[in-house]
Length: 148
Image 1: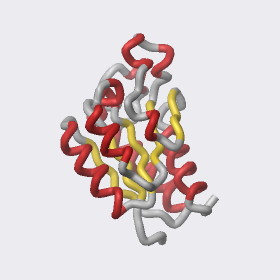
Image 2 (image 1 turned 90 degrees about the horizontal axis):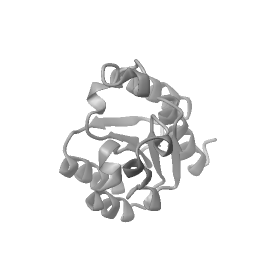
Image 3 (image 1 turned 45 degrees about the vertical axis):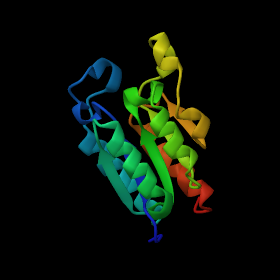
């Protein structure tokens, strides 16, 4: 196993996956996402810290922690994507790969979802691949670590 884990951070309302707007987000739960991510990470010898919060400040604290305790970040900030300068600034300090993930294609949705405060700090952005996007995010981190 790699010494440092991949932090997988999830924002507001992602704890309701599987029941919230399944026509947009699908029927998989966040528990399903976590299991898939852990399985993918294991193929690269990576461990995972998997978190979800409805609170911006908690996500900022996890990002700050990841600066020194993670080999990469896969983040779905959900609604915070579109207005959180705090998350933008926390990610700006990160020297590890950062992959922004969105389950839906945000560019096919409401205009306010077309702006991301996270993308300028991201190594890669994955949108519209469903929950598979999280696994792709782990692939991107592994590639940057030379494991893929």
